Length: 526
Image 1: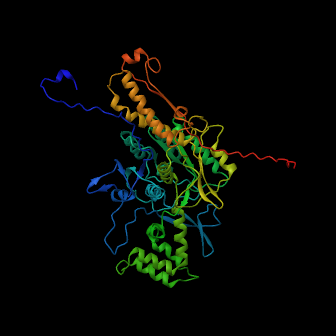
Image 2: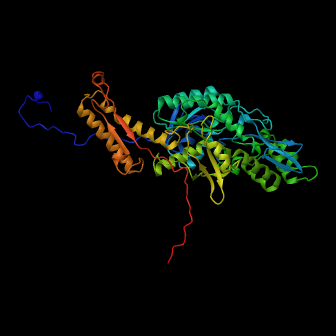
Image 3: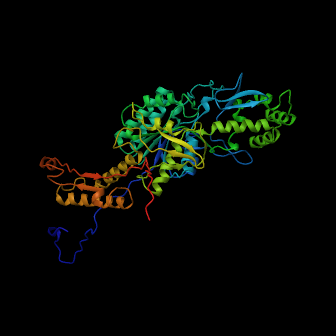
């Protein structure tokens, strides 16, 4: 209280703050998903091209999913890819094929109907996800009514680079997201995919608040020998800027995200049951029950059952139909790992902190891998002498299952930033201290302010050290905070209103390589 303001006799109370300001830790695992959704509407308001925060999968369904029709109609399909069975003259090199009546059939998608965001958000929440941002850049486009060519890259022409980069730009106004994820980036051409990845890394570098998680084109159906070309192409297209703000995972993962109720005859041949009939009711092995069900489906005037009921009836009537559905479901369930990794990172942060490597953990919902990498094959992913760009492997281990077996950024040659948890811990510390320092803007640039800031940041770092986030036997070994005239600032700095705080931290690195040394010891006498 200023005594000069007291003019009337009486008793005055002056409250003083007993405790200094403190640093409130920022959220460390808030992914932002950019891509295409079934819809983007809630209570008459459009959420297209809006960075909208959600806290659960129920929130996602309410805003971005089709509403279910009233019973007894079947629930609305939120994602309905279309697949074709294309007969081949000989056994295909691609693993996605069926043998029906002695003939080989490749299972090929209509590329215009393949999208990944919906299932990626599901995997995020299956693996421990929490708060997230959704940027819907559009809804699903029209199908092409034809399959992709066998052995070619899956490119969805409805997925546009301009749409995704515009959605990315919307995140410039959001400080909370700490991960950028674009599951449908691999549905772009190689050139457009590279342009998007470079834009994501550049934005991460500018904002210094988030990392980008990438998937690798070719990871969906890799060639067991030539997959290295896909890795080289990925490295060639990520550029050279902001590599420490990016992490890539390989290969895709076979999941159980979609169930048998999500795929039925409407997903085959563009819903044309006439093309399905020769497979279920061949002339040399007729199946009258299946033929009658298909006739009822085609005759809408007498159809009394729902799609789900006809689907179940066909499964009971035809083993061939069941095999087709199972194979199509397996193909549709091969998904990019970025969504699951966002959930794993969130779960790891909640249990330990951002300083814990999101590796040596299983992926909930992962059932298979399109390629089983060995140690020697992974070594070429981890370390590249030419580019230095590390790619994290997802591997299968006998008796254990599928594990994330890597925690490196794309900046694999950097001693400072080669590990994801080091980069993410530094983002966490920097942003927490930055936001906590805002109240001191325009405060007197004097020793009292310097000591208050030092005390506030030191107290915060001590709590991080106690939680196991910093190395050192004592706080003095784990960090140092300096702020003062003659140490971090000059007289000109003070006159120009500049207060410089220098924070040094000893971050934790993982025990990535554990070497056990064994020696034989001679038998002691006695």
